[in-house]
Image (cartoon, rainbow, N blue to C red; front, side, top):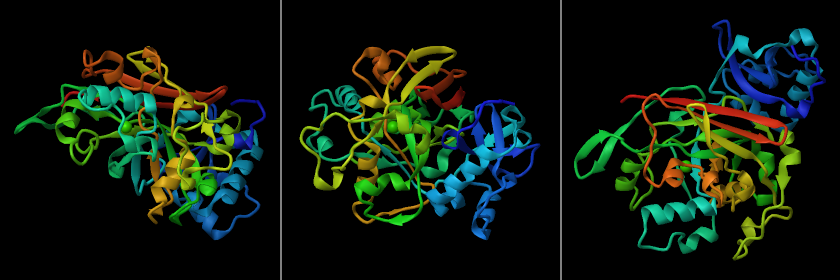
Length: 362
Ligand code: CA
């Protein structure tokens, strides 16, 4: 049990099993966990009661920021006896994810990948600086940290189906969205539809990706698994991590221009078999989360409670700040069976946690 004073804003959200019971919403404070259904709430209406007994956080997300804050405050005010040890719980995937979109928001990553995949063309295409580019991922294969990743099969050349020989990781941040809204969501209202932040590993099979991605983009080279951290850090916990993004050149379109633009100064690390191999930072991202959400919905697309969008690989300008092995080792090294991959993220003293996965043989 920790004895320090908890801050309501700094608690993380998740869903846990206790003693093999049904999954239920929970809040984490360091090494402690509070079960949301056990909290004493001032406004304990039927919708909130139902949400706090649900096997995912979707219903709670749908109730909006006032409900989130009320539960966080009740958790912060709960007596020490209400806490249990994190180690006595099992965290599960906290969201039933309706839609998953992966952006391509890092200019350094886009530049590196253009050079690797299309050496004879300009690394970054003209449209890249005018809008956040993305593809739709496979929501149902998003898995929680700790899930084993089986090396996938796919076509790597004409009629050649085999297990990937070029399995890679991608260090990203993900944003869990809601409540549900019909697009467009104006850029200055975007953060009212972001529930919190997770760490994402967008596993990628480069040989499959290279053969299939033109002309319609990533498919089986990505859709076998995407891992996310079990605990969701609310934006309120990251207020001190907000930074002013650098000016964009050319200036963004009006619907992508915020009155007060912000990025999150979150530092990541990539660890393979216990060794840190790279330290990317989200401070270097070109497109902001609010720009991504505004763009995602500008055509009227509906945002659903629990939707996940990710930043795309976060890479910096230094060799040891790349967010993928393709960039770190230029095709000379890929993930091996048995490798343990752990991505961690923190914003100063605020730990966002980790996303972990072990590679298994095909
Ligand atoms: Ca990605």
